[in-house]
Image 1: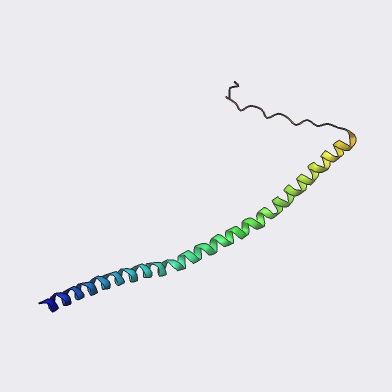
Image 2: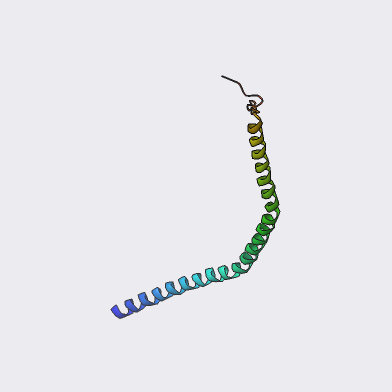
Length: 98
């Protein structure tokens, strides 16, 4: 009787382990089928980022040139004794002063 009970428990444990392994296999199969589309998506994202870098490079260069020009104007103003006052930020429309 004891041996039958132990054998039955062992069989049930094997069934649970088999079910668990089958579930893990299903998950792995799902992951394996997702790798291809994910790789393609990452490749497209990389291509898009490279295109953006190519487009933004000239803009960054233009911004640096603009900063140099502004700095040069500031130095020239200082050299000639001009004092330029920056405009105060105007309050937003609808904003109330306290």
